[in-house]
Every structure is written in C-alpha cells, then in structure tokens.
Length: 209
Image 1 (cartoon, one colour):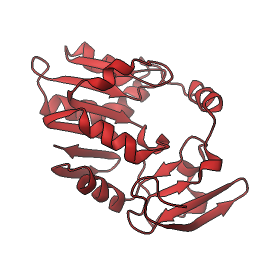
Image 2 (tube, rainbow, N blue to C red):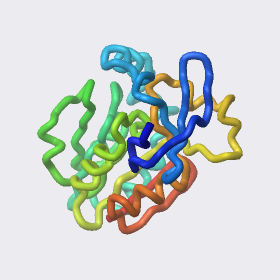
Image 3 (cartoon, rainbow, N blue to C red):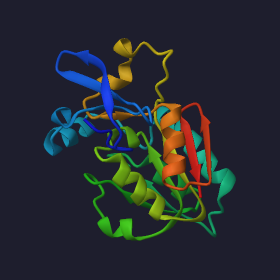
C-alpha cells in the first residue's frame, strides 16, 4: 500500500488483532489501510462519545496551547480564524469569541458548512483532528490553500517517536485515529505544501506561511 500523504511505499509496522499499521518509508507517517477505516456512521458515533463540554475547565486547559498562540500572534480586530474539525464542543471557538476574535466553526459531522472551506483565514485551529484524516494529502492541501499570507495552521496531536512502545501506545487504539505523525512527517508536510516555517512544542505543531 502507498502512503496516503506522500504516496511512497510503506511496510508493515505493527499488527494486532483486528488492525494492522504501516509506516511510510519516506515521510514516516504511521497509518492503517483502508479496510480499517471506520464507516461514517461509526465514526460519528465515536465522536459523540467524546465529552467535549465547552465549560469544562480541563477541556479548556487542554486546548490552551492553541488559544494562547492565537492571542500571542493575532489581533482580534484584524484577523479571522477557522476552528477546523471542531467536534461536538467547539471550545476553541468559544474561548476566542469570548476574547472578541472573529472565528468560524467547521466540522464535517457537527458543523457542516462547506462554504467556509471557500474562504481564507489568518489562523486555522486543528485540535485533535489531523490523526483522523483519511486523505491527509488532500486535507493539508486544502488547509494550506485557506491560509492568508502570514497565517498559521495550529495543530494538536500526539506525535509518535521510536522511544514509545507502539504496541502499548494508547493513541493508536482509537478506531478513528488512522494516520499518526512523527516529527519527520511534519517536516515533509512543511516542504511539500510550501509552509515557510515549522515549530513543534510538545503536542502543538505550528505551520506558518
């Protein structure tokens, strides 16, 4: 099978009952084959189990790296953002709206407003979203096309590295987590989709144009 991000060859990386994972020889993405993709009904049902309460202080703290980065780098009077893949509880949208930012909310299941994908934005937040991409090459191309000059794509995900025992890694077990990233993968994304800069700080990945 070819890598869905860079289309290079991949090899079997890990096997467990009911699921196999491959690693790309080029970009080092770790992913599952299409036969393990959840169908749309199952995928939505899984997301509905997430307890994404916008008033939950733990959830607010979890998304704070993205919110704090927006506050540091963008002006609420001048800049416009998109909360992409916001899920059932768009807490990033809520927190930024409370700070007078102009932010739009998109999610294919819960906020399905495709017209927003025709717009352009100064910042795009993708909190716990990119590991769900079934076609990451298409999705990153879309995200890049929506960013204005000087804009930022702010992603949060759990990055895999070889020091993590993959067989025991909790993050891979979510049936909707189908493409996982190593640091090398993000360097590939930066170069392939012509981002100017890449910064990785724990789970926060910032791609700038």
